[in-house]
Amino acid sequence: MDIKQCRYFIAIAEEKQITAAARRLHMAQPPLSQQLKLMEEELGVALFERKVRMMELTQAGRNFYDYAVTLTKYMEEAIMEMQSFRYGIRGKLSLGINTISDSLIPQALQQFRTSHPQVTYKIQQNESSQLCRLLDDGLIELACVRMPVKTEHYEVLHLPQEPLFYISPVPLNTAVDTGTYFNQLADIPLLLPSTEGLGMFELILEKFREHQVKPSIMGECSDVAMLLELVRLGFASSIVPRTVLQLHHEQSFHVYRILDPNSTVGSALVWLHHRYLSKPAQQFVQLVREMLP
Image 1 (cartoon, helix red, strand yellow):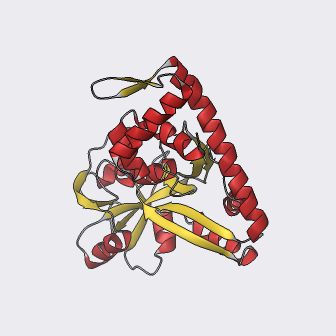
Image 2 (cartoon, rainbow, N blue to C red; image 1 turned 45 degrees about the vertical axis):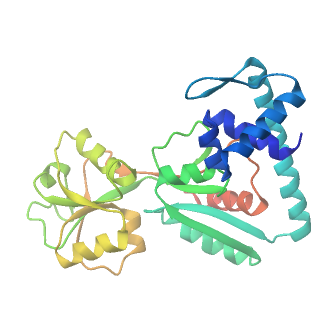
């Protein structure tokens, strides 16, 4: 039995279906089924109880799962450690970024680049839920996600909460100085960032619900640059976190901080509990931790 077979077994155990596990492993279903059969023959026990639409671990399978996770973890650690010896401070930082990323992360990347000039980068942008799937599949090591997400499988480094802002092509008549409240936005058509059912879209709706206000949602736009341009042109108004204004400060429109209590949103840097982090990833996490207020 080899480490690759352990990874196959873990995928089947977690997905509970051969088809889903094969998709996760980017391989065909028949070879995966054959590998599982070979494992069970070599161990002399049934690892799964086959049911109509899912596969459940037997008692032997549950015990073996713990060993398999530990074995793959230590093997990955050993490989990463050897690569660190081989390449020194060189390596690759694979990082997932939410479509509305926290402004701290670009600053951290800039500092990290200065202190680790030989490190290369794989930076992917996506919704938080998709970033979690990429983490689970081992395609990235770290992800900056918008909270809340289910974190039972992750180590979590919370980033500072940030306020929400109402942005509009025209002045808001009911504004208090440079701020406003959710109830003053109830009848204004809003084009919200992100996608319905995901990320920032749902966070903003939840804030309206917390203040017992029913918003007028005209649509969604997951492309932040396009969203801001549409606001500038007078197509719609929107609500965005401070990060968006910091990263796209060249836009010209009216900006009002939402003053309701608890009208803030947060992000976090997350990574898998049981998976070894490469040296660049470990050092990047430490850098972000040191930059937190």
